[in-house]
Length: 64
Image 1 (cartoon, rainbow, N blue to C red):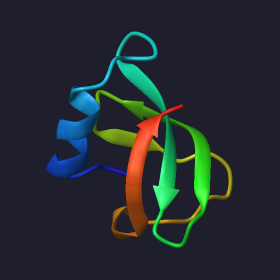
Image 2: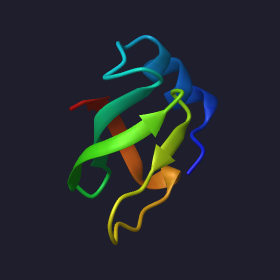
Image 3: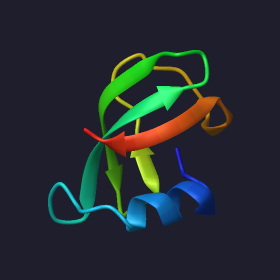
Image 4: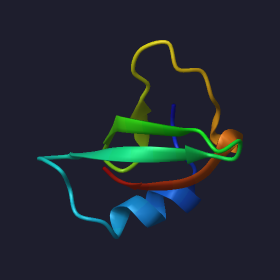
């Protein structure tokens, strides 16, 4: 999933977990926290497993 400028700006201000990627926890508006999601170049969220959510469901993103 490609993230909007809002999230790209937030992730750009945080340190990388490795070269060109960050490992984040995604907090959804329904209270669910999805841990250890990889985001490449601060803009591409690599969804792992059978997780199903869209950007509009995201409340917050923080480093894992």
